[in-house]
Length: 255
Ligand code: ADP
Ligand code: MG
Image 1 (cartoon, rainbow, N blue to C red):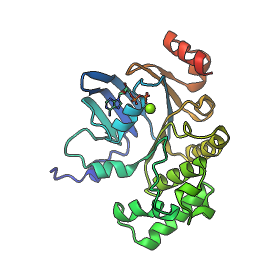
Image 2 (image 1 turned 30 degrees about the vertical axis):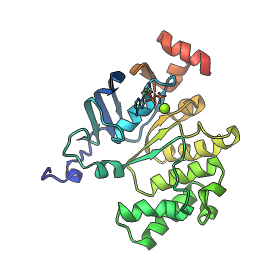
Image 3 (image 1 turned 180 degrees about the vertical axis):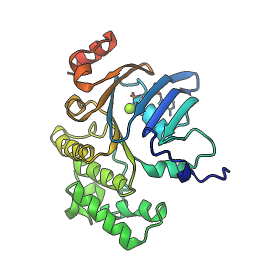
């Protein structure tokens, strides 16, 4: 065990996320082949690319749901690939929202939002419930506090999942195709919540096929293919004038 408490090593001047030469293999399948990039505090970075290009694996490495094979990931200056780093500390600073919502089906919306606050953040019930209400209000679902997930639409479930992540006071949020499982008419409400979060200054890394969102909200767009970053830059520029033929080919299929 390290004698230094991880909180003490947070570097307030460091970028939110800095990835250096990240490699990840599953068996002999090398999925990430040397990824380098930085997410600055308050930045919204959108990640696009074909299925199987390693986007989810990249996000999952950032909060150590996957263990990198080699390379470094610094979160607020702390190397989370260092074996001394306490993963609970890292994960409590990074909120993650998945394509499939991942709410606890046997718990009410309120309990979904309070359980980790009480268990991980050690908040008392009254405080946890107050914070839950605040965050449900932010996503426009204060009236669903007593509902069970099965009684909500997919879009509402995803907004609950966002409110749940926010209730842990994360410094940054990772989104893995948060609207891909939704019926088209429900996508807008979730994107609106994400836009408000971005406008409020949240640092965000968003894997998405929503090019409109990337163009409007993203500070940076990263195009991945075959486990490498092929191209990155200002979203408006990358989308309107992609430099690499692989980016051009991908965008011609999705735009
Ligand atoms: P994307 O999110 O861009 O579609 P993924 O990161 O999910 O891509 O997957 C990239 C590659 O990694 C795929 O070939 C996938 O089969 C493989 N992969 C992802 N997760 C695992 C795993 N847990 N075990 C083995 N292979 C995996
Ligand atoms: Mg994926």
